[in-house]
Image (cartoon, rainbow, N blue to C red):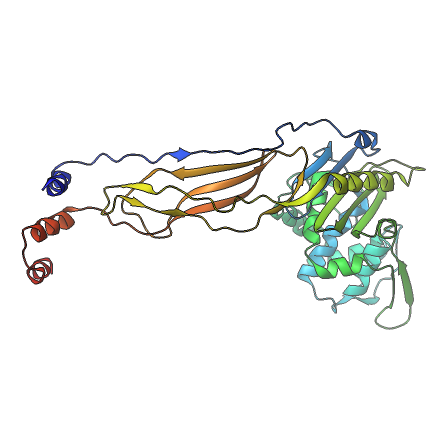
Length: 407
């Protein structure tokens, strides 16, 4: 009788819902994290430098990583990836007078000549030819200006909001949007994206390449100027750059033991200090290799208490979360936190597999992964008809009679 009285009371009175609240729990390790610059990285020549976990985009080290600086021919990684994504490698590219007028470094292509797009990409990425870059841009975008808009949109899509492209080859330039520039962080992020394209890796990892124009009147040979490929067995790809404003620049990537790093340096010396960029890149990569290992930080077997259900036909509902491996690059000084935002009560109706909470994995203050928490079942809301039916059943009216009544 007590249960019946409670249900009748729900019919006759307003129900003041109890608000669900979040419960945060955190577990940490290696809480002695420090921001002190490692000794070997205090001697970097670059004005700006970044070491990034290519798989997550997490910054492992930076020196003025968000300073906006010219980036010279490292620009060409964006030109290349856009050509791969928006063109066909067998496309025929006809050279314009403007493309043929580009200054050194150049392939010395001539107006009216025809080339295969793939061959121009090798020319651009291995030898850093400025004329090939413009020819590619005009073919893909219709004009250099239109292609620059594509470059800037792609940068925004990748979350690179401090980058502004004016030229497809990286020559110093400026337009109404600003000067041609990026940050070491943005450049490393663009390279991390490029690593997902196997053709990009194939082109930029090639040491020597030869080709002809489509009329077979001229022959060319290209040599890869990315010295990192011979310096480190783990090197995947990279692009050099230099202008009078930018100084020596470089962006590259290495992969070893399940770890993939991208590194970028801007303003890394001026003539005659051409080798400074290689010294800096080695320091960055060596630091990453020594200090970061792949670790699975997922907390397996976590059980949640059932959430109470207010105004429900059941008093509680189970909560679940899918388990999966979460392998990340973790350093000795990294602090790992797992924050649970899980309700203790829910308002009916509750639907099966309803997203009601989350679990956040945080590494040194940066959210790396968010997992949704779901309900394990559904709970219908207690309403007038439900209570009336319960009363009728309590007074032993036949089920057939009740069903007929409710039809």
